[in-house]
Amino acid sequence: MATTASAANDAAPRRKGRPRVTETAAPSLVEILNLVRTEQATTRQEIERQSELGRAVVADRLGTLGELGLIDESELGAASGGRAPRLVRFAADRGRILVATLDQTALGVGIADLGGSLLMEHHEATELSQPVSALADRLVTLFRWILERHSDIQLYGISISVPGAVSDGAETLFQRATPGVLPGWESFPLVETLVGAFDAPVWLRSSVETMTMGELHAGAGRNQRTMMFVKVGKRIGAGLASDGILFRGAQGAVGLIGSVPVTVGDRTGTLEAMAGSDHIAQDGRLAAENGTSPILAELVRRGTEITALEVAQAAQMGDAAAIDILAQSGRLIGQVVATLANMLNPALIVLSGSIAQTNDILLASAREAIYGACHPLVSRDMQIIRSQMGSSSGLVGAAIVASEGLFAPPMLKDWIMAGQPQAHPLFQEMKKEIARRKVIKGDMVRPPDM
Image 1: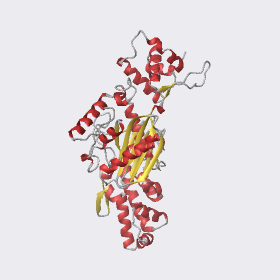
Image 2: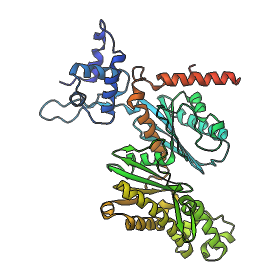
Image 3: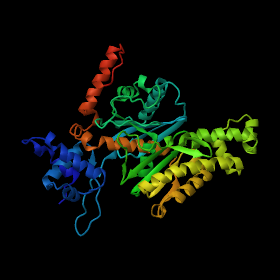
Image 4: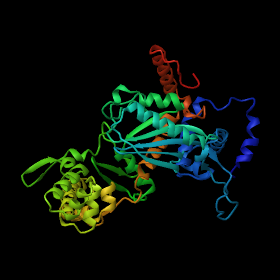
């Protein structure tokens, strides 16, 4: 018969006279928590069956997880011929994850629970070309502002989405140093600054990866076995998820399709250079100057700067030159994506980015090129849609990255007994190293709890 949470807590004093749960119990605690967290098992009976652990062991481990605040057994399930079983739920509200997306022209921040559900978000314009120190200051300020509204719950981690590919060192469970993702980042310790300010482990992932994860878990990709995500902007990149898992490749550099060479007439260049938002804006300015686009020419006369968004708006209004510009970009993107689709056979392709999400012409041209170049078996049931999540997808995906990182068995086994990720030995080593470097540089500001 299932044991209730209150009964388990009442039974806790009986542990006197025998050893408390020791480090040898960590593997079974990790297994049981992840069965509950991923909803593979929702009752004690299901946990016993899935884990192949005995009833007494399961009861003991659930008691420990309950004491740590990581599970909840307060809810009853549906009865099936007997007493209703007590449900075992992951306590996603036990902690919080700070998330941020750094884009070329925008900064987004938010906070999520341990299950990756976004609870609050804020977006503002910024320039990624500004000094990293100024960007870090703003990020810290916004994070502190958010934490003031969630001060009663412990922070478990920080996850940042960045424009460039983040090299994946297989030996790292979380980011232990600031990588050279963008020019200038090598000279400023962004990761170390966040660890020092908030005393929490940090994860970095590319924007395409986080948006792919966001779409997979909270958007059109839910319940899809295989999904390809394509982001169209100044940079063009792709992400691939299969059976709920993001494919990262050998070094975390998956989906750099913007570097693929393409040809239009006698011109050859990379996909980003020939179809990205900078190229769309450039062709739009040329169309305004030579008079082939009356709408864009009028905007120039009014002093409006022509960007890809103006071209997209002109196309939606029926401007022939703007339509041709977007259609050409859509065809080039579609040709490259079709090659990937023929190899990977995705059930769903999602196009994202402001141009793809606000303009039917680029999406229609990409669809036509993809369907036209794909093998019939590949294209037969494949859907090609635009993302409905917008700027939220990167924040949601960043939260999922941190959640999966926190509870990955190699990470979880070294902090679960303490009940908080800050107790992980590698994180403690990182904090000591940060403190040592600050002392050497003469900086009197030290990370918390040192």
